[in-house]
Amino acid sequence: MVIQHLTKQYGRKRVVDEVSFEIPQGQVLSLIGPNGAGKSTVMGMISRLVAKDAGLIHFEGQDLTKWNSRELSKRLAILTQSNNIQMKLTVRELVSFGRFPYCQGRLQPEDQEKVDQALAYMELDAIADQFIDELSGGQRQRAMIAMVIAQDTDYILLDEPTNNLDIYHATKMMKIVRRLCDELGKTVILVLHEINYAAFYSDYICAFVEGRVAHFGTVQEVITKENLSEIYGVDFEIQQVEGRPLSIYY
Amino acid sequence: MKQRSLQIKALILIGLAVLAVIGYLTINVNPKYAAYAMELRVPKLLVMLVTAFCIGGASIVFQTLIQNKIVTPCLLGMNSLYALIHTAVVFFLGSSSLIARHPQLSFVVDLVIMGGAAILIYGTLFKKMKHQILYVLLAGTVMSTFFSSMQTTLTRIMDPNEYDALLGSLVASFSNVNSSLLLISTVLITGILVVLRRELKLLDVLALGKNQAVNLGVDVDKTNRRLLLGVTILIAIATALVGPISFLGLIIANLSRQLFQTYRHSWLIFGSALLGMIVLVGGQLAVEHLFAYSIPISVLITIGGGFYFLVLLLGKGRQQVW
Image (tube, rainbow over all chains, first blue to last red; front, side):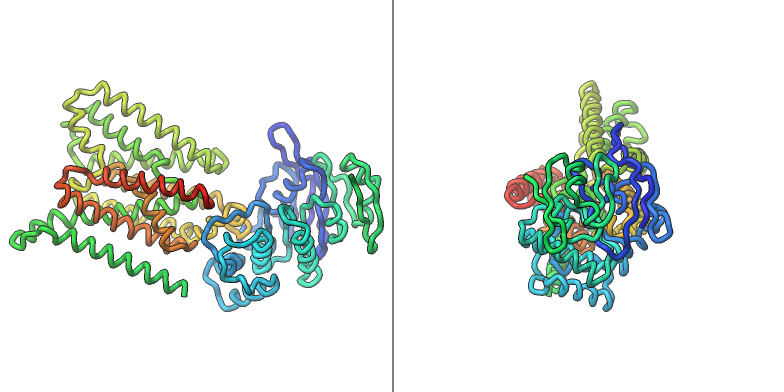
């Protein structure tokens, strides 16, 4: 996926300004930056939830806007922060929705199989028949991920997946992200606020400041004392832990 | 197992509806004049069934589109537009005019004006407003206040005798409907269902929220626009047939949701329509034989619906609201 000169304006304010970068396939890419830097908006445009004002998004050799929506939903999945589903829905039914692009609601045996696999992969078998409004935040998040797995796409976009999760669940979520990439070969793109999660669990980092790409590269290239101070405007200390840059700020 | 309980509940509803229908057709019928009684009662019954289907189905779809369980299609403003049309006809043309007297003509006039307004507001305007469904609701609420104020103004300066004649048509009633309207309505409703058959299948996914629906490959804006238009026209048909009655939708849609506890809209719509039939036919039975026509059915529905609405609001305040 190649992004060229992507621009989005709200009123007079350019929230995303001529952003260009390339998403490396089969890797985990984290978008970081301070509030209002435009990372979520970029994510929205990549996932077609937000309309772009200018620029191009090339996906598998074709302009993203020219893709047939149903075909695209077999290649690219997005999970946003706002997932307050208010229907009476069991975990299994929710995960089955992931097969909708393939079967339009009529589950075939192979769809059932994919659903079962996704449930097993996210260790949701025990609660598969519980209603999702009876689950804890962490469990619900896992159910949503299972649905995305059942959707069986090459690209998975996650908008702040660790939001509202405690340290235990957030860390677990990041490990799942890593497994999605390493075991299932997915390309995962995340919007993250926690720099250390980004540094420890992703391969590439794209840092935004005021609607522009400030830095793009591997974790070691981007997470440096100078770069982070420039991006966030706070002093940073960097220590190497397990070959990864751990940033300390206070 | 779950499928089973849905089926049992559906069967019970069908049973109750059949019971209400049989009761309505047979109670207090002198066998000597059975044919005459049927001639009076069958068309009324059919109108009730059609109305129940329109309002029950439209309400479920509308609530899913708005993502809110306590909205009623009353918000679309069709009730007040209906009242305004009828008041304007009597005010400008008189209660003895052709349109006021001729039920078919008045039905067509209602339908054309309401359908036109629906296409204008919920088709074109929706697109202009970048498919922000809440703006459209706001527009509906403003329109409906606007229509009712005009209507109130007209009734205030109207000849009292004319007003008396008008009042009858402003209250929902099944008493004076004729079967030719029934035929037109059924044809129209079938047409709408055929045109929207694709969109109706997407309702389950739409209920997951806009982002999820887009993720799963649904063209949300287009689907919403078409469904909203369909809902408005269904409500317009029901209102043109019997008068302002769409408040009923709030009751039956929520009863259906509570009863079936499922996300599948085919069941919800089915249940809502059946509950509508039970409420309308049962209510009309009570109006005719218990209250001897002293209370119109819309009063029963509004009182019952009002209480139910409060219960919903108070109950849902503590739980999750949509």
